[in-house]
Length: 66
Image (cartoon, rainbow, N blue to C red; front, top):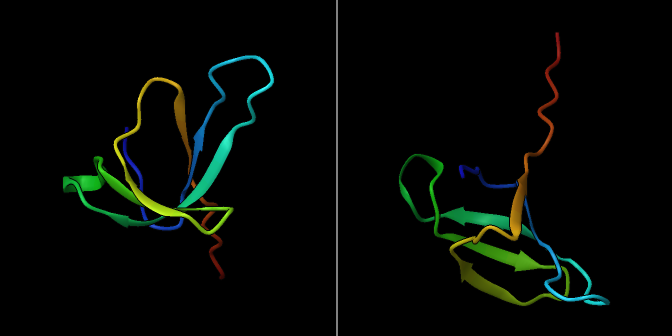
């Protein structure tokens, strides 16, 4: 799993009725985009995450101008 600053980290709910937890990766602490990541979640909470199998990285779209 590799990420860059600005990507979204989505932790999927583990039980029925539990919502996904979404945050923005604000710092990559591992080498070459590897975990751990400092993540700021939508509720303002910030923490260090080493994502497990219930997590996905949604890469931000890069807009290029010509």
